[in-house]
Length: 481
Ligand code: GLC
Image 1 (cartoon, rainbow, N blue to C red):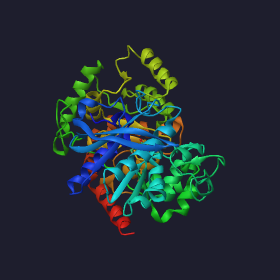
Image 2: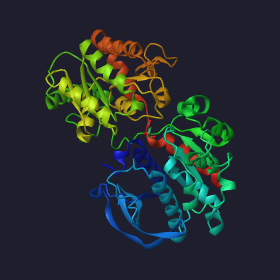
Image 3: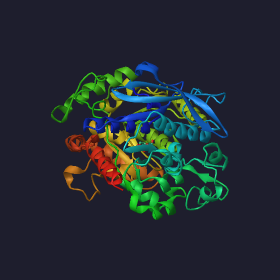
Image 4: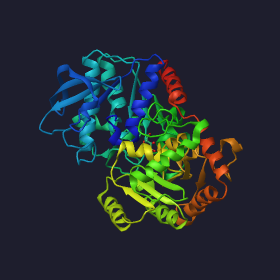
C-alpha cells in the first residue's frame, strides 16, 4: 500500500502522476512531511539526507532533519521538524486545530530545503491548500535568493478546504508586508474580510492552476462549487484548466490483480462470476440469482451519505444484494453506519465493512455488478474509474469527474459503444431510484445487454498516459514564460 493512501485520492494522484512522468524520462522527487503515521514498512532505504536545516519561523528558526527513501521506486524527501509543536507527530495527517501553521511550515521548509540543498527543479508541482503558500513564497522571497527559473503548477483536488486563516501566518513565514499580502488581489479572502486564504494565494501566484476534471473546472468557475473562489478563477482563467486524473493500471487492473482469485479482461468477462462467488463466500452472503450493488470509499458528506444509505435499502427491496466498504472521518456518520451494520447483521443479502481492507476492496470491484456513487460533488472520483475497468457498471450522480467518465446508457448523447453506466441529476431519493432501478432491471431482464454495457466500460482508457501528457504540456508552457 502506498503511503498517502489513507489521505485518499491525492496520494493516488501524486503516486500515479510521478510514475508516469518518470516513465517519460523526467526526474521526479517528492517532498512530504515526515508524519509519524506513515507506512514506514513501505519506504526503502530511509536515511538522513540533510542533517540540519534551519527553517526561519516567526523571528527564530525551527531545525529540521530531512530524510530520504524510495516509495515504489520514487524518491521521496521527508521533512522532520524538531520543535515542541510536534507538527507531524499527531498520529493523523489532517484535522488538528493548527493545521494552517503545520502546512505553512511545511511549505516554507520545502522551499528552504530546495534552496539549501541546491535543488533547482524546472517545475514545482504542488497540491491543495496545504501548499498554497509555496508559489507565494517562491516568487516573493526565494526568487531573490537564487531560485530564478523555477515555475509552479498548482493542482486543486477539492475547493471545499481552502486554508482560510488569520494574518499571523504571514508573519510566521516571513511575509511581513501586510499591506501587500492582505489585499484582495493577493491573499485576502474574497468574502471573509478579516481572513487570508491560502488556496487563493496559490491560484494568484502559480504559473498554472489545474483541478482534477474538466467538468469540475467548469463547476468551480461558474457555480457556487468554487466556494467563494469563482471570481479569482475568472480573473486567472487564462492559466486555469481541468485535467482528468488517471488511474494506475499497475494496481487496478483485473488482468493482473493479485488480490482476486480469477483474473479477467474484455475477452474473459465471464470469469467475473468466479470473483462474485468468492466475494459472497468471504462476506457470507447468500448465493442467489441477484446482482451485487456496491459502494467503495470514504463516507464523507461529499459522497452523499444519505443517498448511499437509501441505495442500500432500495437495492435490497429491488432484489439485489448490497456490499459497502468504507469509513468516515466524521464520528456521527461512522456511528450511523455502525448502527446500520448491526441492524442488518443477519441479512444474507447485505454486508457493511466499516474499515479499509485493500484486498477486500479489490475483490468487491471484481465481484460486484453495479457500483453506486451518488456524490453531492466530486472533483474527479476514483471508484467509478476502477469500477469501469473491472466491468462493474457505475450508477452515478452527474457531477464533476463523474460527468467526464460515466455516460448514461439511455440518455447520453455519446455513441452507443461509449455508454457505460447510469446517471442521475437531482439529490433526492427518486432520482437515485430511477437510475438504480434501470441498472438492476437491465441486469435481471437483459443480462446480455448488461454485459455489453460492462464491456463498454472496460474498454475505456483512463491510464495516466493522457494526463501525464497534459501535465507535460503545461510544464512546457510555463517553463518558457
Ligand atoms: C479528492 C476529490 C476526489 C478526487 C481526488 C483526487 O479526494 O474529492 O474527487 O478524485 O481528490 O484528485
